[in-house]
Length: 338
Image (cartoon, rainbow, N blue to C red; front, top):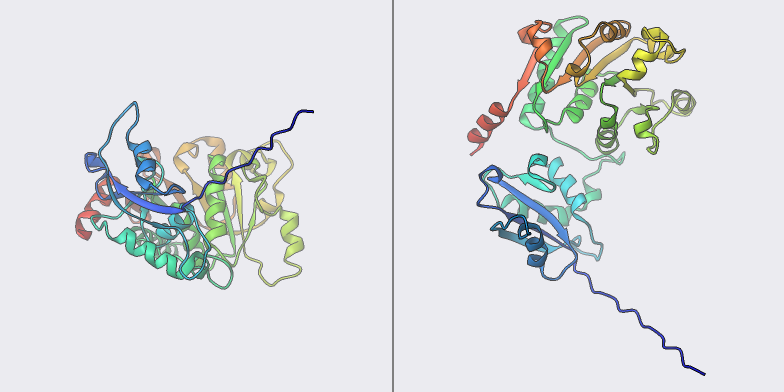
């Protein structure tokens, strides 16, 4: 009778750590740091994997690494939680450089200061009593919101354009604008339904006082409401303000907005406090699209775009109805902050 050998599983000890490094040889990375996470004891092993490959060999300077545990207990956290804290603290995420890069504008020690603060306060401590994260708009976001509010107050049925570069943070700034306008009914329409998750991510993290209505397929696995869900929900609460997210394709497909399908009548029946047209330049300059938006009854309209060349060329917006934030503006601001 043969004896069966029992295998014994070995368990690897993990060392949750957050680390930061820079790449001094890459001028485009100047002022930015990679903020990553590893469970290895030797952080440099992980960094070397990222910087020393068959395709390239980059010199790195590790600034710091520290255990990823909240102070006073054994609860660990990952880099995503810390990344959210950095963005909430006004640190710009540099997606153009790759994943997990953040811009500290010549103050490399700030990343460790914020890390220590995060460990002490905990992520939950950053949330308000309604479970949302408190935030502070960056200078350019605050300026965009303030100028739009001023224009809307002076111009009935005003249309305002944010001509802002990528990573401006248009979604959060738009939500902030809606709240400060006291908008109860907000309609967001985009020509790019794939970005629906970005809108809902910021809603879940930062926005209180609103319900979120959407039936777009991009959000099919998220905790959004249908219009009927919303009507049932407000029977049990005094909170009636809501945000509706629609694709431009859905809007134009409705017979109430020039299409062939019997849907979205309720959208046509309402007068919206704020219509937000995301990436306006990607479809707004067609007869059907113009007709669809003309059928939306609203008090104010905010256009979001990074390249609204046609709209500007057609002089759709007067100078006082445009807020520009370009790469050049960003560089000038960075020089002022230095």
